[in-house]
Length: 487
Image (cartoon, rainbow, N blue to C red; front, side):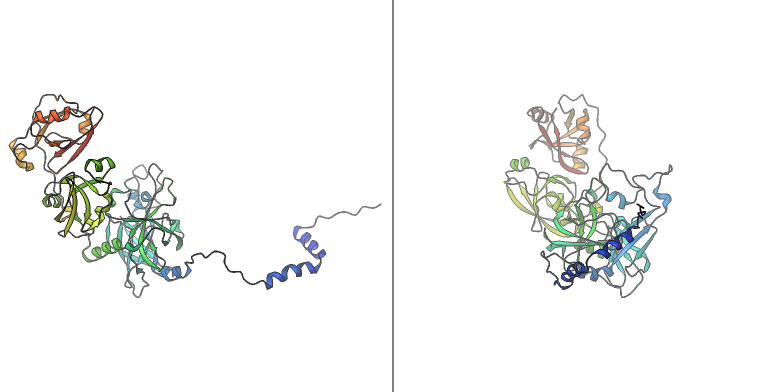
């Protein structure tokens, strides 16, 4: 018997042959229900941001800031940490490798606030830039002038020469509550006009950057990455409520915690930059810290609420108003202070010279003190301390030798007769690391006044080994507490 060869058909031909053998009624039966079935309603009602995005996107811009690439590298050709553009450091966690700047180019986002061409973005997007290019969603490109930039609020104002530009609507960040929907539009990693959404996670958050203590940040879970900097954070009405600025990350990428500058802070900064070219802030002249449970119990407070005053700058607004180290600031202009981070934004938003009422808790009672704010950049300069006189080796465990306060020191520091003892020698690394120096005056030990060397030694003798001793110290710049463990 003769065998016929079996041919291997190409895949397309094999499929065609197989379908040719199938009954036509099968395809008709399967196609008919799909054509006649009505569209089903969604089982879950989800938010739809398409109208919001269509309305706002024309007022959002992509920003490219370029600088001399030679300034971004060291002589060995590697980027120096201080010279890397801020946009890279702001989005990288501690201990993570820093990416190299791409030829001195910083990418960010901004938004138009007025039809005549004023734009808001982040300070760290344009800081040190030689040239700034703004790109609109209709593909137009315009060179922008930096009108002003403020590092403390991380806000910059740009101006392009154009008219009849679409502008955003400004919302009210003070009405934001955790759980509300918010939307971000930006250019992460160069993907222009990317839209991300999430909810407000918290308000009045403090920054990890100590230089931004005057900003009560909005925390969200909106995905923010490099290139989103300076872009708008929007409520569901399409109004700008914040300026996206930072993320918290130990990987360098978004992990669910992002921060935006409240729009009222941004607009106040922008207004001052446009009018005067600088931002002026009021300042109390105090160093504050969180009120711990232990310290609250010491002060007779039922809960650790308020800002604990660690020190007061000599001659400052707080000093003149009668605020003392050890006070607990519980309200500012009638607004409750729950933690230390609540105070700086409320003070900084006021202009120097403004009068404010500071409510403090002291000696079991509450009192209102009226203060006229100083300017933030007008802090009293510290005068040099008097040279230390030779002194015998200290005998106490702290390694401090003290003596009576001389007339010159008393006059320089504004002390009364019999008030405090002057440190003549610092003989331990522990005391030096705590910031104690010869010429400083110790006013009290653990809340008890000391006016003689014998009284100082007697109070130190009451402190058991391993416990904390709190010294009230005055120097040329401030009066405040220094805490250190008793060896």
